[in-house]
Length: 454
Image (cartoon, rainbow, N blue to C red; front, top):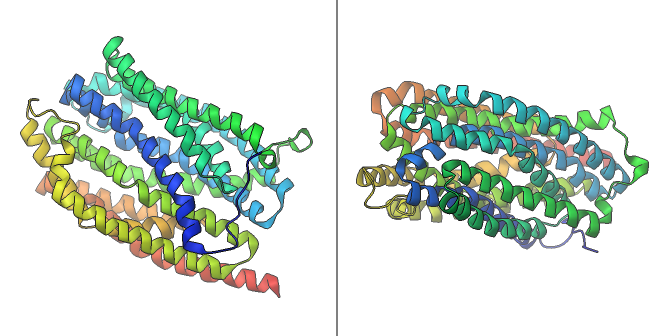
């Protein structure tokens, strides 16, 4: 029988770091799905195929981010009830989350699969890569149930303090992903559709492994027959947490879609350069997500346990660690962005010199502002973990507006140079808001806990 882990006692920073390390490794492994797809596609199928894989990355982030956000939100009441020791209530929330997730899988998959060609047209996908981009996106969308399965179950495991097991299962599926990539692309000649199918099947395996493990090893998460009843009250609570978190991911992605559409309109060279740089960007952002997710779970558990001082210290120490990492990785991107892009683009490929130069320029510009992501992600997820998702969503709106303004106003004037600074405008403005609202929420939660104690 596996053990749960409460973070309501003991040293704060070591707990956050210990919890975040498996999350970080898991995020890195999850990113290798796309990373390996892009590397194999770029090296074997060429820059145009790489552009096709990356041409819809923003809309993938929109849809898959919505799914991930929903699952993270559904786990907030689980963490809070676990921290308070209310295990029967926790299991009732878990059951209702299963029902809502199944319904969401059917609805989101159907809508997205039908909408694929229209999405790519809105993104101004170049005609020479449109067919491959459609095949890749369509298969990814058919795999949405696999994304939901893994993220819901792994979120529940993390809510009770187990961040290691989801990582182990992702590690297994990452190895499977490499094998399937090579088999479907090289042996069966399935092209970019094979890369997408390898990603979907691999994530499905990690979700099934989580389900088996959770059922056998975590009786505290097991839903008995006596509590398998759908409750509109609990469903509303779950949706009140999940929808704002999902929308926050999606609203952020809308700005990225506008940005990607503007970039796609510049031509295939810039589409390929952006695709390579995005893979590196997503990989280097994993530590921000891991630290912030650990702080979110920490804050939720300590809120349930009624310990405001630990909440404050946990958020502060997590934010400092995140910002420090941002400084270090930012310097690396500034100095070695072009060389890192060579993982995806062969030197002998058509327009390779131009693609590598533009990818390196994009990454170098990002590097100067990476520190802000440490503050932004930690504060935003802490607010969500404390149950104030409706306030955190506004930071996503701010990011969307900033990217949209830069894409629509400045890209026509300054072309790819404006693309290189679109993300930074979003990060800095959203960071200012997120830090301020985090201070407000912590003070509000502290008053609630103190009033309850009286």
